[in-house]
Image (cartoon, rainbow, N blue to C red; front, side):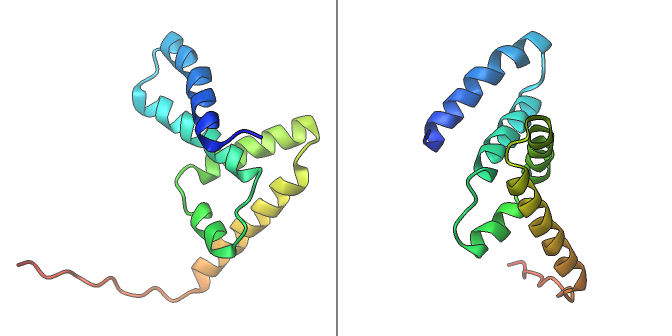
Length: 110
C-alpha cells in the first residue's frame, strides 16, 4: 500500500509529461491531479462519518466519483465502493435540500 506522499509523487510524474505534451494550463493539470488523488482516497474511505461528509464537499469529489464509476464498470472492481459513495453523496444532497438555509451572518467592517 502506498502512502499519500508516494501517491502524489506518482500522480505528478504520470500527469506532467501528458500535460506538457498537450500544452495544458497549470490549472487544468492541478484539477487532473486533484481528481486522481481523490479517486485514490475514495478507494480507502475515511473511518468516521464526519470525515466522509467533508470529503463529499471537496471540489474534486464529483470528478473522482465519475472516474471511479468508469473504472469500476470497465474493470469489474470496486463496484460496491462506487455504489456506496454514490448513495452516500445522494443522501447528503437530499439532506442539503431539506435542511433550512440559515442566513449568513455578515461581518462588521471596522
